[in-house]
Structure formats: structure tokens, C-alpha cells
Image (cartoon, rainbow, N blue to C red; front, top):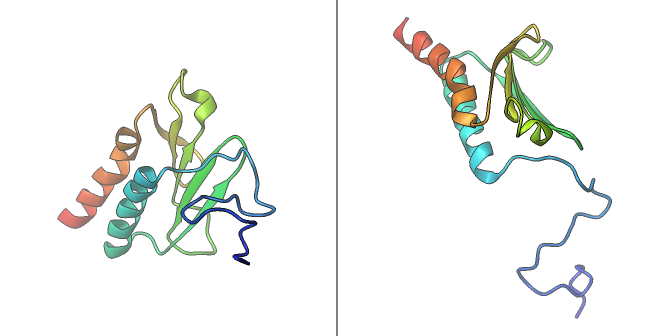
Length: 121
């Protein structure tokens, strides 16, 4: 049986060959929440592109107004800070910390408020 998975059973998760081990990532629920906000910001005309970066210390989601600019917002997950100020940080366009916290929803709140303000205008 030549399945290309090295004899793994169907339904078994096999690591990607050559992939980084020990990197931080987003859970499905975290990514869903972030992409939901991203989609609403795109619909409002605020964001047009995004990028994600996964490293050993952190996972980053960056949202751009235009692809050639600095990110308008950057959401960073750093599990090493879980027991201190919280593993979530929201950075603004100029790198300033807009919000830190233990819960993703609370950290995304300033962007949610900005979205509501854009809809009201």
C-alpha cells in the first residue's frame, strides 16, 4: 500500500516534512475570531490584506490597509507571557501597544470599537 504517508493510518495527523517544530500558532477558534474581525474590517473598507507569521516565541497576525504599508494592526500571541500581563497584545500602526490581556476578545475590543465607529459614520 503506497499512500505517501509512511504507512500512517487514515485519519492520523502526520507532521509536515521539514516543518518547524515547537512554533507557536493560533487555535482554530482564535483564528476564526481574528478572521471574523478581519472580514468585517475589509467590508468596511479599512483593511485590504493580511499576513501571518509563526515563530518559536510568538504567532502574529498583521492587517494592512495597503500591502506596501506597515500593518495598521498587529495581533500577537506570546504564550511565555501567559502568567504575566497576558499572552495577547494588540499593536497599532506605529508599533504602540494598544491593549494587552489574557483573553483574545478583550484585546480585540479596541478594533471592534473602531469598526462600530466606522459603521456609524
